[in-house]
Length: 378
Ligand SMILES: [Zn+2]
Ligand SMILES: [Zn+2]
Image (cartoon, rainbow, N blue to C red):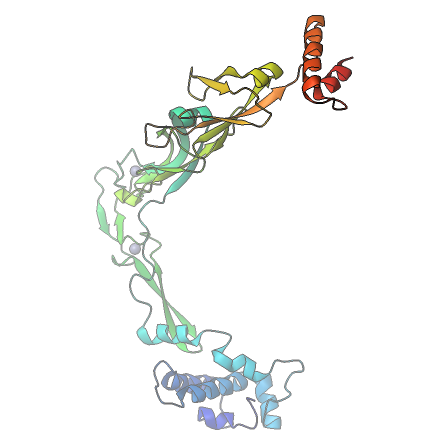
């Protein structure tokens, strides 16, 4: 239990009349020497916590009054969390960070690395499955920060030149000093006047204000290779955001979206397709032609005799091209046996004859599929 009957004044080395400023000064002095990052004595951490605790109480006028009266802050403020919870592990704020900042005089150079390179940009291109099969060239139109045409990316107006930034003297960062209860704290940030480059332009280009880049509507032609898959990405070098005054430009990253197709279902580089066969084609076997995925391509599908609905016929090398290769996946045809919805007199007669022959072979089943068909057509 923290807080019980400790002499906080003694811990901070001050007397009972100490002013708020005295308390703060005393705490700072103690905390600096006792911080566990500096003081390796075995009891340093415990004493550091005590100093924190004393400061926490004495720097708060109400707590200090309570403590002065009762000699302890036990029971101070109903419903308050146990003081141990607050102090445990230096909770609340991070002393470690505060101290390393103060002691080292600020974080090292490069903590706020200036960003002068352009960023990557993203775009999406939609292609049909047929376009994905053949490969296609597509144009993307988008807005980006492009190298300024007026100054050719230098950022200088005519006669202008680069000069060392007066605000940061070329370091690219500015240091601000804040007063805290721990003393002065320095923070470094990117120089607002030069954007961290350390350089400004004495006569900046009026079109880009010395940035060397300006918004522009860009057109980029993208060659999409045959066999591309949905979600694949292509990188177009240097077509992202331009860098500041000629720094490296980002890339344009194009994500390919391959649209679904009404006829073909893609599975990797295989294509699935449904092919309709009449009852006679299914029974006798047949050669069925259909349009392939490639332009003007006809694919021949050999349906074997006795085919049933959902039987599968695989045709090699008629699927999607493998990306970057000459060969292709397969076309996988799923048979759909189609029963005629209407019959001519002659067809009906022929089917009835057929039905009789099928009946003989099947030892008089109650109703054959042919009988059901015949009934349905009546
Ligand atoms: Zn310019
Ligand atoms: Zn600067």
